[in-house]
Length: 485
Image 1 (cartoon, one colour):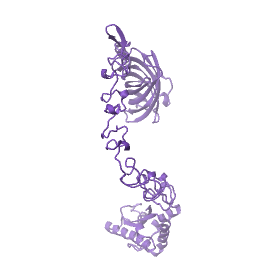
Image 2: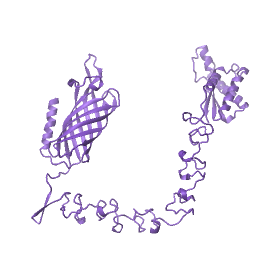
Image 3: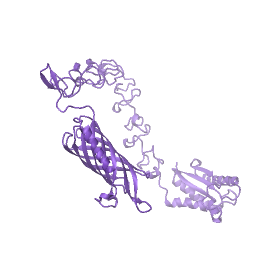
């Protein structure tokens, strides 16, 4: 079957080549037989012919420059898995589908009988077992000219996968066929007055010796030169070859009709005098900067800042200042860094206390203070079934108040929890009351209420097994969490 397919490919190449002409086309297709080795690069033996698996490739070619081509090959094959096998130990085969985008650089032109080239690119490979990986091919090939349009192609490439155990080697043989308008085998000759024969390089029907643009297809009215925008002015004389324009302005338009062509008009859509570069005269904000060059024409500003104001006087125009009312350096887009921690105030969660990027500019909470809050969760005691803090726990609450005073840029979230003994509604109410009792204690000891929040969760968030005595004891708790303000 493989031999038959390869012979069919070679037959197609010969039949296509029989009527091909010189490659002047910009697009082509290819068909190649593939020999894929997934074994030698993943623990197998290099050069073991039995490890090669068969596949095929259909490709699209696009000429970018004389020696440069874009290649988009689609590959299909069935390869031997080196990581899986059937139950009886026989090889496990998996289908692979690949699509690449490659750049091919030729060391010689297509007119050469043999043309060596290199190829590199990036592609994706999908396996029928549901796995996908990206691969980067790098290869070397030779192109043999079969006719003016058809070429036999032999290529080898090493493919590096971004997934483990997927590196592989691929060899290919096939053909490339180019489409498009045919160029003659020899120079096109036109008969003039039945006697002289002359060349017409661009095939526009105008002989080169009278064609002002012999290498560009043009019109007879413009002596063989092109006119891309159709304004009656040849492109080589047109200052705006892609925009329909007037002869008066060398092929450029004057959209606002002020007598100044758009390519020279600083206000091409607004009528203005020529002596003001086509912009309306005046200085609406009376800041000494003409409206046509004023970045902020409706706000009086500084000449040094293009006519824009600078409210905070930091040398950065309000238009470009992230903090227009607070002076700051340019490195922070005009915002200050009050605590000097490298985070400007606009993104610093604690702008008055130096911190790190990892804590959004807030001070790091010490291990000791974190442990104090953790101990408080276990050590805080209330009268049984009530929300009254026992006197023995006052020292714990005082420690929490001290922590709050040391971290003025943090707020405290207080959450109460219970075990599942009793009614759920009763437990919910008790958890809320106990959290609120802690809240009130801290307020009475000098902590501002706007830095505190309390909430009860009842028995809904256990941290231990409520069927055990110890578990219920752990679940009856009040948690204290510091959060940036």
